[in-house]
Image 1 (tube, rainbow, N blue to C red):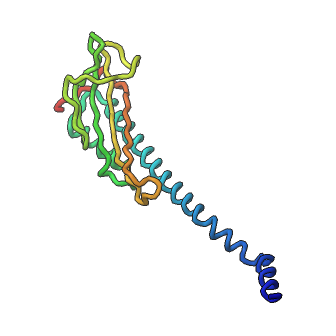
Image 2: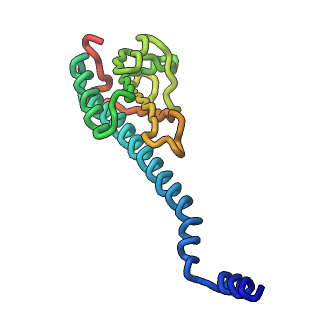
Image 3: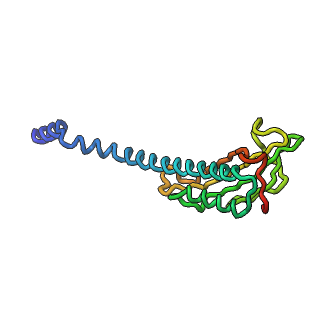
Length: 180
């Protein structure tokens, strides 16, 4: 019995395995935090690139007085390049010309989409208050990206990022699409 008491006393006072036990308890939490921060960082970078692509579509389009379908398709191609190295298949974009009529109703003049259906000419859209007065025009750029995390631990479901941007034409009062 004395040998058993001595063994138990030595076992209770032994400090040699404490670090290994602490590591075994903390390691799963630290690994989970690492993967979670990695997933959120990836999602944030995708969202930032999509925002930049949306901005570039509006910016390039607003710098012209007359655009064509081919020019708009080239602009969409630039947006796809901006998304690199992330997959471009989930990126959907649309650019439209919007004019507020004399009654204060904002309507679509023309629209072109890549992945998103073009808006119908004459359809009513909501423009933020104070952005344009009656008779003025704006370029409306919209995008959506369906992000699916490659790891799927913290973000196991699909996350849809959306962005809408309004930009005034730079050279003329209105950007016209000649063949949209």
